[in-house]
Length: 412
Image (cartoon, one colour):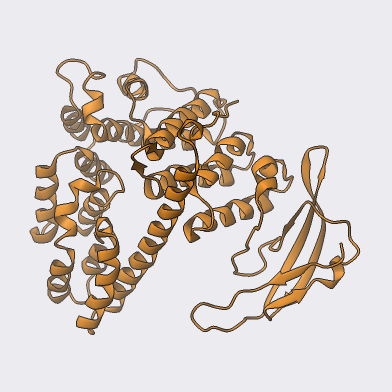
């Protein structure tokens, strides 16, 4: 290798180059394993820094400039083709964890299509040995698919991946040993995407006791998760539930048996997952007007109203957000509710309108409390990232022939 350089981008706010310290890792393929063979510590501060200690080394198959996570920076992974094939072959748990994190940053930054991330995860997650990595990536898969993928004419991208994730999570759950600590992650992630008749039949069989899951006891918290999955898919579960049993009756019966604080919160979530616009409007009114309703219950309800799924059922709230917020702040200028409302009820469905409205709102309301202002700016930032990631995913879908959109599902 004649030369290896670190290239640093400027801080987007200060427009300066900061001084950092990192460890540059050189990886080589050996017997189909991507092995870290040399680590070079280096300090860098300008736009470009030559890694002099790398000169003369054998050209690596992969370079990662962040081994050991010694500094708070984003690492551009460059060409990730080798990771698509060999990510799970890296024999270093912490390095794999960091690379998974950087791949997630790339999706959010709009430099990696969500589909590419999901394909890497579908291929390599079944081989992942780290519980922390497996749990984090499994959760991101469904979150990214829900937030960043859309269905368009000729490209049912979101639907296709939702189907694949349901099958994938259930396969991992079914194949995991009873003592596998990752099993609970597969269980909850499956419930998050379960939507098909066959998937909901499994949900009902566990809830009703017709079948069991080795290693997982269906206790109260798990029962609520099962009921919530059925409530969210009320239309599809009609053909699954026995006569006389509905999502509503399941919620009522479970709440009668579980009057704990947690049970009441879980019941709120299950109720608000029902595709019932009238019910959602009633809860929204309670959030705004019912003084005796605890902040914990209001927070639970707002979190349930603000999910990525069924955004058409929250449009009524989104269109009122910027009109209601100053009134809420005026009524409770130093309280937690205004900050929580700003963060959880931010009108993401308004997309570019909401992004622009944040700036005009803060200009019009110079006295906005710091906590509310921070929540608005964070949501604006995240919405920008979401829309950018979504555009990248749309472009990827259009560039992929429709008969090649769905790959082979990796199971073990």
